[in-house]
Image (tube, rainbow, N blue to C red; front, side, top):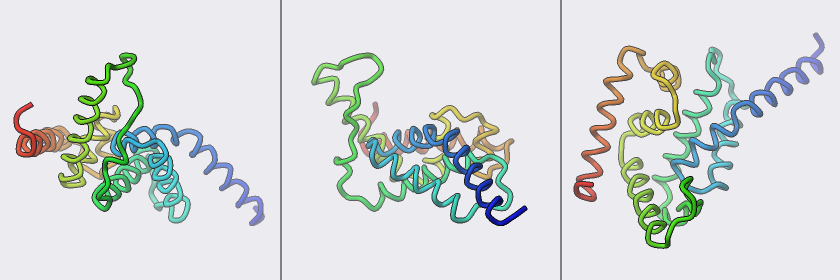
Length: 172
Protein backbone atom coordinates (compact mmCIF):
# COMPACT_ATOMS: atom_id res chain seq x y z
CA UNK A 1 0.00 0.00 0.00
CA UNK A 2 1.41 3.35 -0.98
CA UNK A 3 1.95 6.08 1.57
CA UNK A 4 -0.62 8.27 -0.19
CA UNK A 5 -3.22 5.50 -0.13
CA UNK A 6 -2.56 4.86 3.57
CA UNK A 7 -3.00 8.57 4.34
CA UNK A 8 -6.28 8.66 2.39
CA UNK A 9 -7.52 5.59 4.25
CA UNK A 10 -6.59 7.10 7.62
CA UNK A 11 -8.35 10.34 6.71
CA UNK A 12 -11.48 8.46 5.65
CA UNK A 13 -11.45 6.45 8.90
CA UNK A 14 -11.05 9.59 10.99
CA UNK A 15 -13.86 11.34 9.07
CA UNK A 16 -16.15 8.36 9.73
CA UNK A 17 -15.22 8.43 13.42
CA UNK A 18 -15.94 12.15 13.57
CA UNK A 19 -19.32 11.75 11.87
CA UNK A 20 -20.29 8.90 14.19
CA UNK A 21 -19.34 10.45 17.54
CA UNK A 22 -19.07 14.24 17.31
CA UNK A 23 -22.66 15.01 18.38
CA UNK A 24 -22.48 12.82 21.49
CA UNK A 25 -19.14 14.28 22.57
CA UNK A 26 -20.54 17.78 22.05
CA UNK A 27 -23.64 16.92 24.07
CA UNK A 28 -21.59 15.51 26.97
CA UNK A 29 -19.35 18.57 27.05
CA UNK A 30 -22.29 20.95 26.64
CA UNK A 31 -23.98 19.49 29.70
CA UNK A 32 -20.97 20.53 31.73
CA UNK A 33 -20.13 23.93 30.24
CA UNK A 34 -23.57 25.10 29.11
CA UNK A 35 -22.27 26.95 26.04
CA UNK A 36 -22.72 25.54 22.53
CA UNK A 37 -19.72 27.28 21.01
CA UNK A 38 -17.44 26.24 23.83
CA UNK A 39 -18.77 22.66 23.74
CA UNK A 40 -18.05 22.46 20.02
CA UNK A 41 -14.56 23.89 20.56
CA UNK A 42 -13.74 21.39 23.31
CA UNK A 43 -15.23 18.46 21.37
CA UNK A 44 -13.09 19.42 18.37
CA UNK A 45 -10.08 19.59 20.68
CA UNK A 46 -10.83 16.04 21.90
CA UNK A 47 -10.88 14.84 18.29
CA UNK A 48 -7.67 16.74 17.60
CA UNK A 49 -6.00 14.99 20.55
CA UNK A 50 -7.13 11.63 19.14
CA UNK A 51 -5.83 12.57 15.69
CA UNK A 52 -2.48 13.79 17.03
CA UNK A 53 -1.74 10.82 19.25
CA UNK A 54 -4.08 7.88 18.81
CA UNK A 55 -3.79 5.42 21.72
CA UNK A 56 -2.29 2.11 20.64
CA UNK A 57 -5.10 0.05 22.16
CA UNK A 58 -8.20 2.10 21.43
CA UNK A 59 -11.12 -0.31 21.90
CA UNK A 60 -13.92 2.23 22.39
CA UNK A 61 -13.28 5.48 20.57
CA UNK A 62 -16.58 7.06 21.64
CA UNK A 63 -15.88 6.52 25.32
CA UNK A 64 -12.31 7.79 24.93
CA UNK A 65 -13.55 10.92 23.14
CA UNK A 66 -16.29 11.56 25.72
CA UNK A 67 -13.83 11.15 28.58
CA UNK A 68 -11.31 13.44 26.93
CA UNK A 69 -13.98 16.03 26.18
CA UNK A 70 -15.26 15.92 29.76
CA UNK A 71 -11.76 16.33 31.15
CA UNK A 72 -11.11 19.29 28.87
CA UNK A 73 -14.38 20.86 30.00
CA UNK A 74 -13.58 20.36 33.69
CA UNK A 75 -10.17 21.92 33.16
CA UNK A 76 -11.76 24.91 31.44
CA UNK A 77 -14.28 25.41 34.27
CA UNK A 78 -11.55 25.33 36.89
CA UNK A 79 -9.39 27.83 35.04
CA UNK A 80 -12.11 30.24 34.04
CA UNK A 81 -13.30 32.64 36.73
CA UNK A 82 -16.12 34.03 34.62
CA UNK A 83 -18.46 31.02 34.76
CA UNK A 84 -21.58 33.10 34.25
CA UNK A 85 -20.56 33.59 30.62
CA UNK A 86 -21.12 29.85 30.12
CA UNK A 87 -24.74 29.75 31.28
CA UNK A 88 -27.11 28.06 28.97
CA UNK A 89 -29.97 29.99 27.42
CA UNK A 90 -31.54 27.04 25.66
CA UNK A 91 -35.15 26.44 26.64
CA UNK A 92 -35.88 23.15 28.39
CA UNK A 93 -37.68 20.26 26.70
CA UNK A 94 -40.91 21.15 28.51
CA UNK A 95 -41.46 24.18 26.31
CA UNK A 96 -41.03 27.84 27.10
CA UNK A 97 -40.44 28.70 30.72
CA UNK A 98 -41.68 31.67 32.63
CA UNK A 99 -38.94 34.18 33.47
CA UNK A 100 -38.95 33.00 37.10
CA UNK A 101 -38.65 29.33 36.07
CA UNK A 102 -35.87 30.17 33.62
CA UNK A 103 -33.88 32.06 36.25
CA UNK A 104 -34.42 29.26 38.78
CA UNK A 105 -33.30 26.61 36.30
CA UNK A 106 -30.22 28.60 35.32
CA UNK A 107 -29.29 29.15 38.96
CA UNK A 108 -29.64 25.42 39.62
CA UNK A 109 -27.49 24.57 36.59
CA UNK A 110 -24.83 27.01 37.77
CA UNK A 111 -24.86 25.41 41.21
CA UNK A 112 -24.48 21.93 39.72
CA UNK A 113 -21.60 23.10 37.52
CA UNK A 114 -19.84 24.68 40.49
CA UNK A 115 -20.25 21.52 42.56
CA UNK A 116 -18.97 19.34 39.69
CA UNK A 117 -15.99 21.65 39.19
CA UNK A 118 -15.13 21.39 42.90
CA UNK A 119 -15.22 17.58 42.89
CA UNK A 120 -12.45 15.18 41.96
CA UNK A 121 -12.30 14.97 38.16
CA UNK A 122 -12.86 11.21 38.26
CA UNK A 123 -16.09 11.60 40.25
CA UNK A 124 -17.35 14.45 38.09
CA UNK A 125 -16.58 12.54 34.89
CA UNK A 126 -18.32 9.43 36.23
CA UNK A 127 -21.48 11.35 37.13
CA UNK A 128 -21.55 13.28 33.88
CA UNK A 129 -20.97 10.27 31.64
CA UNK A 130 -23.59 8.25 33.53
CA UNK A 131 -26.10 11.07 33.12
CA UNK A 132 -25.26 10.99 29.41
CA UNK A 133 -26.56 7.42 29.35
CA UNK A 134 -23.40 5.32 29.41
CA UNK A 135 -23.87 1.85 30.85
CA UNK A 136 -21.72 0.53 33.67
CA UNK A 137 -19.65 -1.38 31.12
CA UNK A 138 -19.15 1.71 28.99
CA UNK A 139 -18.20 3.71 32.08
CA UNK A 140 -15.63 1.07 33.01
CA UNK A 141 -14.03 1.30 29.57
CA UNK A 142 -14.25 5.09 29.33
CA UNK A 143 -12.69 5.72 32.73
CA UNK A 144 -10.38 2.68 32.91
CA UNK A 145 -12.24 1.18 35.87
CA UNK A 146 -12.80 -2.36 37.02
CA UNK A 147 -16.32 -3.18 35.75
CA UNK A 148 -17.19 -4.76 39.10
CA UNK A 149 -16.43 -1.53 40.96
CA UNK A 150 -18.37 0.92 38.78
CA UNK A 151 -21.56 0.70 40.88
CA UNK A 152 -19.69 1.34 44.12
CA UNK A 153 -17.70 4.21 42.64
CA UNK A 154 -20.86 5.73 41.16
CA UNK A 155 -22.58 5.56 44.56
CA UNK A 156 -19.56 7.24 46.16
CA UNK A 157 -19.54 9.96 43.52
CA UNK A 158 -23.26 10.60 44.05
CA UNK A 159 -22.72 10.81 47.80
CA UNK A 160 -19.79 13.21 47.36
CA UNK A 161 -21.89 15.34 45.01
CA UNK A 162 -24.79 15.45 47.48
CA UNK A 163 -22.46 16.30 50.38
CA UNK A 164 -20.68 19.03 48.41
CA UNK A 165 -24.00 20.47 47.21
CA UNK A 166 -25.46 20.54 50.72
CA UNK A 167 -22.24 22.03 52.09
CA UNK A 168 -22.36 24.87 49.56
CA UNK A 169 -26.11 25.44 49.24
CA UNK A 170 -27.86 23.68 52.10
CA UNK A 171 -30.37 20.89 51.62
CA UNK A 172 -32.26 20.86 48.37
